[in-house]
Amino acid sequence: MMKLFQKIMLIVLCTFYLSGCSSSYESTTQVEEGAYLQLSGNFLNGTLIIDDNLQVNLSEENTKTFELQGKLVAKFPISIGKHTIKIIKDNKVMVNRKIYVSNKNVFEVVVP
Image (cartoon, rainbow, N blue to C red; front, side):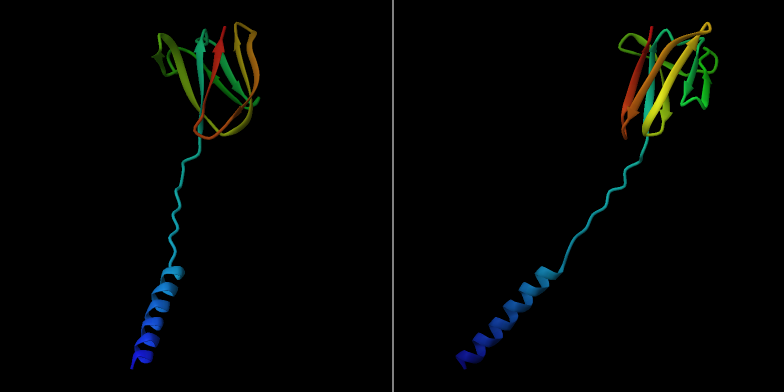
């Protein structure tokens, strides 16, 4: 009788052990990709050129600006990766930089 009880207990314990080992939990978090280019300084009335493709007129009428720590800034969405940024004002290149922007990063360019 005791041997039968031990066998049943062993089977029950093995069943609990195997069922605990076989279950798993997996979680996936989806993160929105994107980054921003932030301009500060003397950028109004200039032209922003990104990768020699996209040109943005930085006039007061069509550029959404805000104040951050006492400075006037503008923020533009930009894809993650390498970019060449140029800002031209009064036919002079004010900024010509190669940048790398990572996901959820805000890359600031100060225009003199």
